[in-house]
Length: 255
Image 1 (tube, one colour):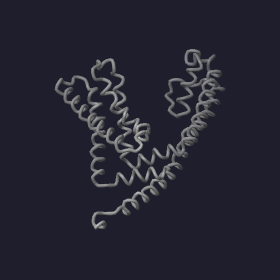
Image 2 (cartoon, helix red, strand yellow; image 1 turned 90 degrees about the horizontal axis):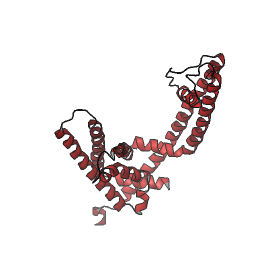
Image 3 (cartoon, helix red, strand yellow; image 1 turned 90 degrees about the vertical axis):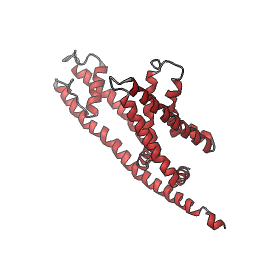
Image 4 (cartoon, one colour; image 1 turned 60 degrees about the horizontal axis):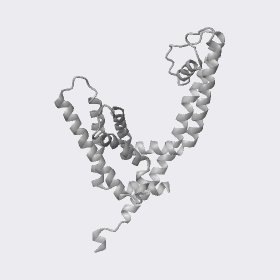
């Protein structure tokens, strides 16, 4: 089912006309994200703000037309509407329509949904599609590892609290302070704002640092292996899509 879906997607997107539309949509997505950042600049003139708002209206209209077209062309339409990209496309245009007739300040936080447009780029980029497929392939292993990492995080937070609470009551006031330290240590960030001073705490930190290397290395290895499988999967789907294109009858052959 996955291969047939990929084949259908690739075979429908390999035409020259659709390729040009893809480039236009990619450029519009990037420009809309840039406009979102420009809106946060201080001391913008009313003319500049109006220009940015006009561009946002234009981009939203284009993305809306794209969304409606995909709903219309997909059979059954629910397949697209409730798919990952369908939900992303809806979230990308929803803030504009929700703000119509309502004060912009009351829906200011909803503007952050516009950032979902960056995920739309994954549809038009084979590398990003490959990464998405890799996450899907390795999702069960990643979920399992994520659960184990959360357990390790909690144990590390509780452990350092037990070692350091008496020596540093102001730094480790509760287990939550220990969890902050554990998060920084396991991810090898190490802000340095909180660190152990007792002998037991230092030995415990050494063990956590060693485990922290695994927290980074294990998911990287899982995704790397999944990327290889995703590449093979997409190459097979691409081959099937090209075969379908070459098998289509042309006007000359019909004559």
